[in-house]
Image (tube, rainbow, N blue to C red; front, top):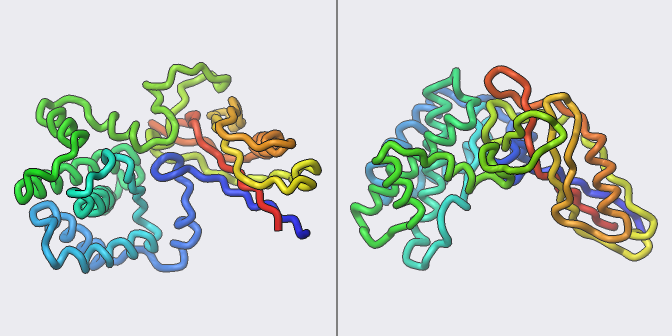
Length: 281
């Protein structure tokens, strides 16, 4: 039997900032002024009339464009909404898409802040809430408890973006994490930083002889701190596999080489989730 180890180090949505689309987006040229103007107009139109017939065609174009274009990067967050009831399913996709649209518009209109993940995230949530209010004017029954709570906080000038960020991050935000880490400084979620850690080398784990003999396959999920010092620390096991595969994944994680994340013009530590997929061929 031919053996091959497939390894995927992921960051799941907005969380860690390493996505498959990054490697393929470079195949096309950066966005054009005409494309950027189209995105801005689309976002503004959707905020006032999200259910128009014209919006369907534009949504299809935007979905493909944002996946392909290399210079405008946004991350969707479907988990921001509560479980969708049958009566609201037709609105859910549009609301999440509006979050991407509004984030893209922020990056387009604020090129100096275009990489600021928190600022883009806030713009995305604000745009989503505008569309939600437009939908409610047409159908007052299409309510989401979580979005109603965000609107109440927004109107009261109280913090709501942190709650939304927490829903969209697979690891705890820095102010909601009670763990003490060996890294020795504040450990941020990647969604909180200006620039996420850049992976330079990610070794593949070996298959243990015991696991190969028994035909064991599956995924080991780890959490680890990519410390401001440039070291991998505080590796914790989230999901395990038997017969030495977890230990092999941990050994590979320790060898990751990276440039630390950047926040406020300095290197910072970030907590990331790592997935090591083991398959036999």
